[in-house]
Structure formats: structure tokens, C-alpha cells
Image (cartoon, rainbow over all chains, first blue to last red; front, side, top):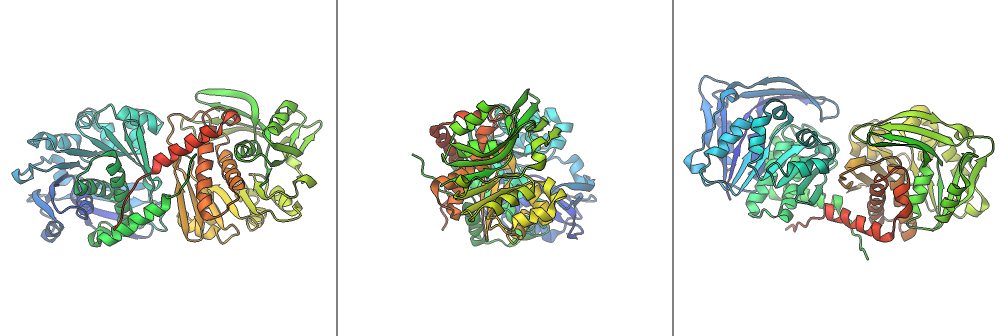
Length: 307
Length: 307
């Protein structure tokens, strides 16, 4: 099953209490694509960079099974750049710089070769761009997963609502769920959001795990307690990539399989934070992943026999 | 197996965004005892109240299998009183009043009839009082569980450290674990705390669940996502009472059984928050509890077959 990913491909400059980087490759679609490439080798990337984006990094994505026919390279322009500094809690962060550059007037192209993509991941972007991608698919993919953030709830609510109405799965964090539904209880928020379009809602709670809601069912997946979080950048996108990559690999979008996909997504995210940027995602074996999933199983396993 | 519980028996006046109470019966030992009484009928209470504490409420505790030979009633004095107001998040709260009253010079009495208690629950109290109870046991109970709070870390650290050194299990929340160990990572904090005396550490994370650490093992139990939290007062103590009550009932203090005890404790806490004060704990059947435990099982259950 093939996966179309639209999102940012960018440069990040990251500072933590323990180290800092200059410009390294980042962006939601990069993390999503790299994570998913551990599960499937049929990934169609839709994005835009400037001519400052190294050819070798584009080739690297290709070497991971990520097609770049839909990756526009704008001559004379610069790639999207984000710079952030994490606090000691390695969770909250200050944005030091956001230079939209080519992202400012990104108009997504869907190459013909991408038109039969079965799964669509709408990475966090301007809702208008996410909607364009949906509109430009000739037939609706089997599964559409959407990520967004509170910035769009504050600044593009109408556009956002229109896209949300058209997707199968929405992935957001707990604060965003509360803001979107205007409810404090995550259960009430989920019930509301499940009337807005999506039939599945994933609420990402960072170090506290993730919740999956569908109809009147709920599943909770933990996050692995880690001795060290080195760089949390891209963890949420990595989760999404692992999640949708696993679904595309197993070709099963039942609730039961979504639970497994959440566990695999969480496992991928736990790798992402171990090193700066995408480094840890570059060299994972399937054995690494299976070992990590076993840790998740061990973390939550208990047996209670009820009368 | 019998359980000795030392802690406060008190009056609470609680305000939430949805309602308020006048003085109702509360206190850590009340919640612990009532929760544990769903599992065992051999509970020995050590505490102190004033003569403003109604005889009928003492009889009610007795009717639940809680012996009150160790509950001192001080003539001419008033019971401990706490008043708090919860914010909209139903988690953070302002303390409006804390009147120590009889608690100010509480000197715990251990009746002879209590001396063979197998399990000891040191509810959150002045470390000095917790230590007195330990010292006044003729033989060391089979299992000693201790709760505390950041207030004692700030105001009685030396006394606190002395008690911690002597217990088997410490239960605290995540902020307290970080403060006690002076570490941000909960894994690092747990590793440190497990050198301070306890061989098991329970980190309570409220709506985010609970972690159990022992040697190099870790278990994570979720909290049930709730549509409504009516009154969170006493939830942590209820968790502790369910936890130690289940251990005392099953007479098994292995890591595997502790995991089950965490689930039962979490189930009890999920009942506590449904109504004001101890009301929900007063009329639980074992069927209610088993049904709730089944919800926990369903919440986290997934099956992944690894190669």
C-alpha cells in the first residue's frame, strides 16, 4: 500500500540544555517519511524546498523509498527554517525563529504517479494547503490522517474545520483537543471531535502516552519512561509516520489494528528522541523496532483473572 | 492479613466549579481505610479527632471493619480541618484553610490489639509521627507503605529521609519524585529513590496514570479517561488504600501482584472522584469493582505477535 505524505521539508536549528545544532534537516514530512519508511517502501512526498536544500539529502530520502517527484525545488529561494530552544523539562520550548521562505506560497503539486496513493498523511501545515492536496487527488484515498496544531485553530479556524470534516483520523495533542472542542474533559472533547468529521481521534500526550478514540471505544498506549530525552524535535511526526506506516504495511484499518499502529508509532517516537534531529531514524533495523515494541508490551502487561 | 493505617481523620470543606460542600468527613486515613475495606475486613486505624467528630461517623468506620481502638478522641478540641477550592481543570486547587487543631501535637497510640498488624500504611503526615508509629510496633510488619508530600520535603527533610529509609514502598506524585531525587527524568529519579530505602516506588501521575518501579523493572498503569471528575479529593489516598488492601487480601507481595494491586488501586480512585468526599466509596460492591477493573483491562489491551 502506498502512502502520500504532504508536509514540510526544512532546516531546523535546535538547542537543548545539553547541546545545540546548526541547520539540520527536519520538517514534519521528513520525520513522517523516515518513520514510515521502516514499514513500507512506497512513499510519495509532496513538499517544497529552496535551492539551499542539498541534493544529497534529497537523494537520501529517495534511498529510503521516498519518491520526490512531488518535492518542488524553488530556485533563488530558501527552504523553511525553524529554530527552537528547549527548556530543562525537554518538552516546553521557545521558538527562536520561523522563516517561512518557500512555505509562504506553497502550492502543492500531485504528480500523476502519486494519484493511486492508498493512504494520505496530511502533515501539520496551513489548512488551505492540506485541503488543496485533498482536492487534487482524483480519487479519495482509502485512509486520510491529518495532523494540525493550535496555531491553525487560532488563525485559520474556518479553513481548518473544512479539512477536519474530510478526514478519517485526526491526531492532535491534549491541549489542542481541549481547544478544538472547547471542553476540558478529554472524553467530552473526543465525543465532540468525532462529530466534526473524523471517525478516529488520536490524542497525543507526549511523555504521558496517547489515547485513541473511536465511537464509544477508547485505547490508551503509554509512552516509554526514558532515562534521557536528547531531542524531542519531530517526535510527534515520527509517531504519525510509524502509525500510518504500520497501517499501510498491514493493510488493516480496523480498531484492533489501529491499537497496534499506535504502539508502533509510540515505539518509533521513542527512538526519535534519542538523538538530534532525524539521526536515530536513519539506521533502525526491524529487530531494533521489535525489541522496542517488546519493551512497550512489558511495560503495560499484567494479568488479572476476573470471576 | 491485617492492615494498620495511620493518617488523618478530618473534616473537609470542598468547592469545585460545579458545587460545594460544608464540612464533610475526610482525611487520608478515612479514604485509605474505606478503600481497603473493600478488600479486607481487618483494618486497624491510628489517628486523632476532636470531640466535634460525630460518634455516628466513628461507628460507620467500625461497620466497615475498621477498628477504632487507636483513634484518639480529644475532649475540648477540634478535629483537623481542610478547605480547598478546585480550578476548572479539576486538578489544581487552592487551599483556603488548614486548621491543624488536634493534629498539631498528635502522638500516636498503638493499642496491643494492633501489634500483630501484617501490613502498615503510613498515610501522609508529619514524618515524625510516621516514625513514631514505626518505632512503636513491637515487630516490623511484613510490608510498610508510605505516602508523603512535597510540604515535608520542604519543611522536614531530615525527618522525612529517616522514615523513607525504613519503608518498603514509597508512593508520591511525579513532581514530588523529581523534587526528592533532584532529577527531572522520572527514571533517574526512581533509580535514586530506590537507593534511599524503599525497594518499590509508585509514582502517581493523576489523570496520566501511575508508574511502579522495582530494581530495573517498570510497570505503567493508566488512569481511566473520565467524562467527568466531580471531586478529586482523596483520590490518591483511595488509590493507596485499594493498593494495600488488595495486597493484604491476596497475601502476595511479588512484583507481578503489585501490578495487579496498582490496577485495583487505580480502579478504586476512579470511583472516588465520581462524587463528593467519600460518598462513592461507601456503597461499592465487588461486582462494581470487577466491572471497573475490566474497563482498565479493555483500555490497555492490545495483541502484537512478534517474530
